[in-house]
Image 1 (tube, one colour):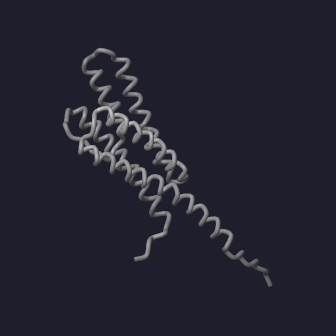
Image 2: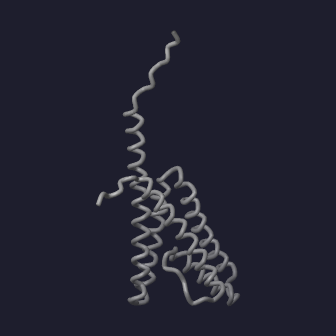
Image 3: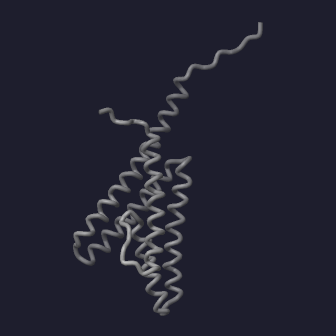
Length: 166
């Protein structure tokens, strides 16, 4: 079996993962607002956590300004990932930025989970985070490979022959 070496496929997969991640994160926030007990693991952990904190503070009406700050943090993270998705179509370095942000999200998830002890259901979250990190960084590496390939193609192409009118 021949391994597909086309870097465009890895870039497309990374961008797809990023968009699915954003969509499912928004769906998780909506599920939270509608008081659903379920959520998708293929999402941004910090955004869901911050949404939960903002929601709980908001409904108790204790510290509305603090709830708005948490809500603003949710919005900022969603916008950052959306910008990374949009910009990664032309510059794959945005996949690196998204990967680093998601790595921070993963570190936050590990820290929160370590405070509450181990639960077997967390394994799915860990696996999903590893998969998304792999996808984003693989897409970034493929983008670097694509740049090198494009430069080689430009160098290796023969120069067009000059047309001389006779």
